[in-house]
Image (cartoon, rainbow, N blue to C red):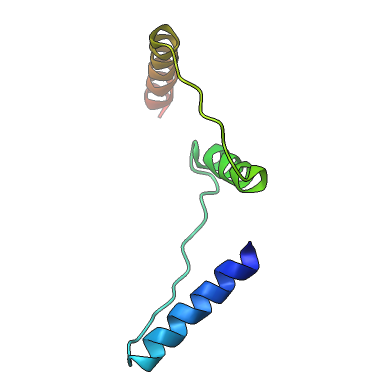
Length: 81
């Protein structure tokens, strides 16, 4: 999988070069230390390893409970700052 991505990137860069286009690559800082991003990164890595994901329908009562918990967590983090 990674090899095909690298080959595609090389192909695109070569095409840009032939068209006399300039491509600038830059480094983007990781998500380290940013609340929630480390968890999102972990899930993203798992998704690439699993290959496909199954999606489950959420029930409204589950979402309401989650919303309430998230709001409490958010408020406690904001008030602690």
